[in-house]
Structure formats: structure tokens, C-alpha cells
Image (cartoon, rainbow, N blue to C red; front, top):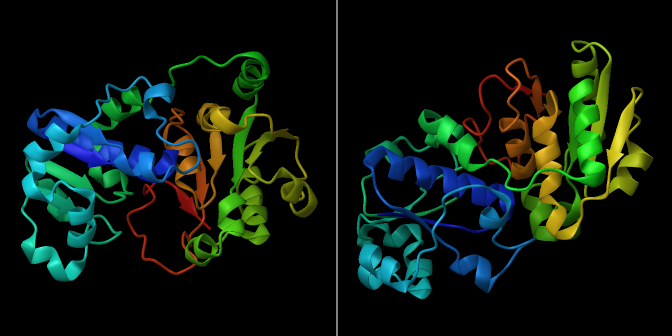
Length: 292
């Protein structure tokens, strides 16, 4: 049995699911997810994988957790044992991501395992990319405005452009950790793409469209997508994945929008500096993506 602890927003949950699903598939093991953190401290829209995607996800209950972790299954004990100084006291079944870079020790793991971490690298699930893409097939077909927009996206040299602000700006702790991509980054990315893609049309996604309209001048045909709110926010990712090319923010949400883009000739541009606090991220972006 492999259990992945889920926390954070949708993009984070997708990375945590993908890593656990890959490990379980490697060993032919049962795979479950632990959503206790999302229930205790919900962020954004809470646990969304079951409602958004066609993934065969099962929820771990207390009996599952005890069968894998034994006496270390309680949230209090796990918080305590996440401290590096107590690493030597953990059982081998409690697997805590040791650092943000890709950890080669992941490939040596075997069930039963409980995974806690962010696991933000394609390396954790690259061997099972087809399975992950299938699991992350969007459950609901697009409708109304979004269906019309999808048709336009398919008929143009479409480029998604994602500007993440929101809690990155409003929460001082998030701002210190993540920061926001500069207007210079977006201007450079737009130029990079438009120099290589004939007649690009930009589809702009943001949680602060007022700021985008005021600060970012796009001298190409563009469409501002600003009607997917609340529980429909994930549709922005769905539409990003339908675009032929992508310019992403320092956000796991648009990372997945670009990764799920099935265009074999896609051009993906990402920020070279992902974190404001200079966290090392050599394995975060697929090698074919362009960094600026």
C-alpha cells in the first residue's frame, strides 16, 4: 500500500498524487490519498481531484494509516517526526521528502509507504507519464463560454499566458517565499514566443486581471479569460492545456496546464527564478521548456 499526503492547492495535490501513483504502479500496490490536512486547513477549493479528474483515487481512513504507519499515524506524531533531528526515529514506512530537488532515493522505496512532501519534479512520475495524463483527464466537458473559447483556441496559434498574484501578493509569508513574476519576464516571454510562432493569439489567465490590464501591454491579439471563479477556477487549467503553447507563472497550477498540453510541438516558457527566497529548483521544469 502507498499513501500520499495531500496538502496545498490543486497543483500541489496533483504533484503529490502523481508521485504516489507512480510508486504504487511500480510495485503493483494499492494507492490511496490522505486528505486530513485539506480538511483541517482547507486552501483554495480544498480537495478537488475526485470532482475534477477521472482519476481512480481512494481516500485513506484511520485503519489504512495505522496499517502503514502504526504508532506514527497520528497527525501530532507526524508533525513531530518531520523535524530533521528526529529523522533517525522514523520507521522506513514514513517517507518525508528530504529536500526540494529531485531525490534519487525515491526509486529505492517500496510499499508500504506513506509519502509526505511536495514532490515537484516530473522525474518522480516520468516513467508513467501516460498513466498520469490519463488520470488527469478532465471529468467534465467544457460548456457555454468555455466551449466557444476552446474552439477559438483550437483554430489559432494559441498561447496561454498565466499571471499568478492573489495570495502571492496578499499573504506576506507567501510573498517572501514565492514572490511574483515581473512584467519584464512576461514581456520577454511574449517577445520570445511571438518571434518564433507566426500570428500568435494570447489567452490571458489571472487571479488579478485588473492588474494585468493596467501593467502588461500585449501588442498582439489577446483574450482575457476572467469568468472561471470559485469552484470553476480549475477550468482555467483545462483551457491552458488546450492551448498550443504556454507561458507560465511561478505556479504549480500553470505548470500542470503546460504539462497537460498534448501538442507535440509546444513551446513552453517558464520563469528561471521560481522562488523569491532562492530555493534551488534544478529539477522542477522539464528539460524541453525554455526559462527566461
